[in-house]
Image 1 (spheres, one colour):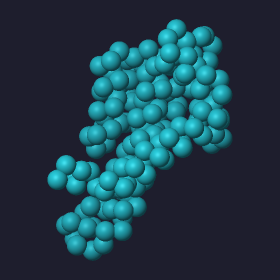
Image 2 (image 1 turned 30 degrees about the vertical axis):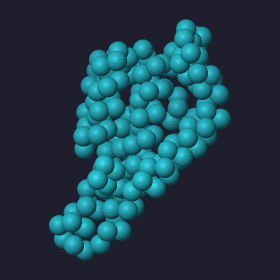
Image 3 (image 1 turned 120 degrees about the vertical axis):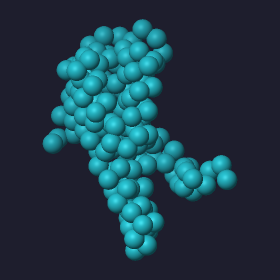
Image 4 (image 1 turned 120 degrees about the horizontal axis):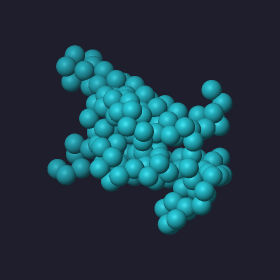
Length: 158
């Protein structure tokens, strides 16, 4: 799939990220089973955990991007973000959002000007998707690196 096709509609981009987030949950859970239940190796926890963490952050960015563009209510944004915390809930949320008309077939802010600061930023990002995607990936990578330096989430508050 060519990169611009991935970004062609909010529904397509959201579907791909929801599925990717679910797949990385699988990697992480299998890794945890190998480490904690079977006591075999922790390699898949490190790999799966890293992939899941990065994909999780990307899913959050895309959720906010789509929510602003498609004018989601706050409760839908919270549910979208919350679906990434519960294993395997991103795909059911994406399907529910599709049924409820939250995921359009076009980017609203590509065609019209944003009315507030956030909409103006999203509008600019959608009109210049390559630089915007590169900036988003760099920001996600920085956040990901900071989180990695803090260690596993289970150790953050101990």
